Length: 191
Image: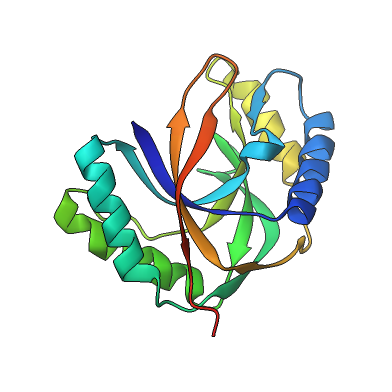
């Protein structure tokens, strides 16, 4: 099964994210971007890919033992950008800022899952929330125009979110889009 570890957002933040997506969508050529459905918006901490049932049990045990005593933390959603850059955008994202909580949790997950065969991130962890991806059939000129257009917008803070749980999800890819099923929720220490 295809899996990933992520943070979910509360409904009030999802509503704000949906409004931002809807507005940005109105500013870009139709069918040039694949927008993430509001109910699928999440912050990926680690993509695991295809795993076996045995690996699933090992991942669950490693997550529970390694992060259950970690303190909850806050993140803030603000700013917008594009990977790799506005001249050649492939991914449209919103920024995530946090003191150290999110990077610490990511580092723990990377360290604890490495012995189970999950490679640690090679490049630095850059927390972001993917809003849309440029479709493969979108020509270079249109993509460049998208980058130029979206670069004109500034996304102020959409609010702070208290992260109190880390989730393990299964992702089933369908022609209508991915379907995410929560397999495990690990509560963080809220003392």
